[in-house]
Length: 325
Image (tube, rainbow, N blue to C red; front, side, top):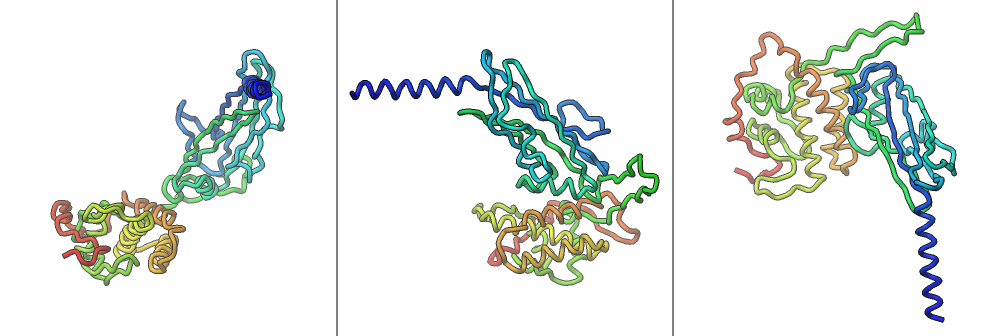
């Protein structure tokens, strides 16, 4: 009896394996920005709005002798836009056969592209849309990346050709600003910023040039002894750094309402001591504002002083470590 049971079990296992071999797919996914040329092999970049993204899905049966049946197909990132499943399932595809599906998504403004970029769980300018295919005891996926322009930096708004009443908006000139790299080597400019008063950045009180330079020169991930900061401390450090730079941009060069609102939110988050939700997003937003106008010329009469990287690094004192001499 025991031997017969083992043979039956082995036959069942072999039967399942045979079923698995009877289905096999590969998939392809491509995204094109309609009306835009694209370098072959590169991710499309959305810079002009309104923009229409054209998604092309291809599902190919690569089993040499049998049809393959797709039981489940899904594009989770695009489910809120009506294309969660580009194909009706279950779907049988004959030997050497293929199926194609197309979907178009219109993005009215840069913020719509940025919302997609944020929805994949990573804080960057890209979104990776993965197409998943499952069949009996097997699955595969293919993905395509789209890069969004940065609002108020390199995005263009254009009127659709069929709207005679549309008026092309005047290009938005970015606010004058400088990034962290500028302030960490221009001691004179940084000192002028601190001349307006100390900064409460939540993780530290910045009252001196040495402390401000410490925030700009220190590693967000490591303390001065080489110890590893926690992930939450590291994110707070990075946000505090960008908040310092943004404050100096505001004090020295003025600020737009958008930059002021982002800075106010960042300071409230840092001073509130809440969890790490939003820290990475806020740091990215402030960094974008700090970089946006870095190519604009400094105003007449403003003297930033010469760059002194070696001296600036030598006097930097991390303000998050109060016992450091």
